[in-house]
Length: 120
Image (cartoon, rainbow, N blue to C red):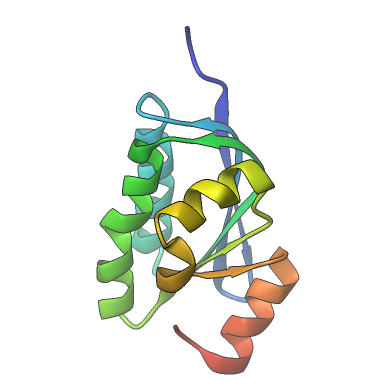
């Protein structure tokens, strides 16, 4: 069974916005990984991951976040997560993501946080 997943990339004021849609699992995690890498290759170090349409995340999907966060923070950037649906938020909370990542309500809030305070 193929998982339904897509990543839509955009940019607001130099901040990369990645909107996730569908199931982020072992089969689709490489697509998310590639999208983050493209943002980094384009010189964007501040990323917002919009999870409004993300309906499921597995450990492989969570691993993509973890595999990039140190590199991005070392480069002076950060990842902010927004629009997380309750089912996915529960997974983030169980794993302590709210202590590692700034999780906010929506894209404008995440962008504003970058513009107000930079990183972290």
